[in-house]
Image 1 (cartoon, rainbow, N blue to C red):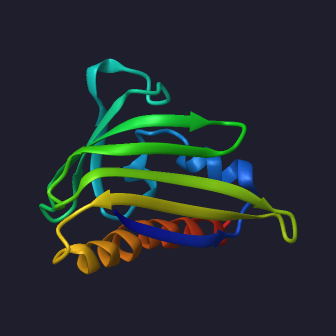
Image 2: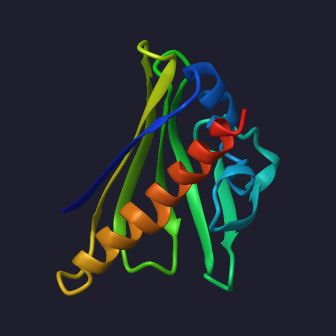
Image 3: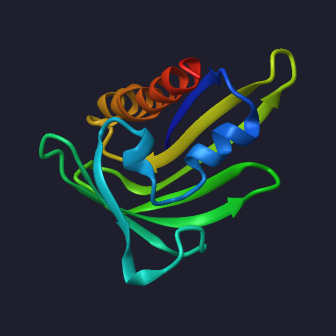
Length: 147
């Protein structure tokens, strides 16, 4: 099982960051690699079990993910990949937030675990950790730094 761990400090209060990312259907609003997104079957975007279907910029492919957990009290959501151009199986990820009381900031942590071919592991860990997770955090940091 391969694992990815990425963390960052977002210069905003926890509730503001959670308000920006909580909706499972708003990836295009804050993630730079996502072109468009919708929730399948007219389900609510905070309904555990809903499926988001999104396309990546530059013809990067289509991804479908299922929301497995959403906790507004503990500020996290967990999801799995159902379909993806990435060569991963059994992919489960969690994006979680914690308050940093010194300066009223937010600690953000995005983790994933998945199975893959050993020959693809290093490239996938780099892509997911930096190309997906860190690039999302960078946009959030820039967004809240300008406020």
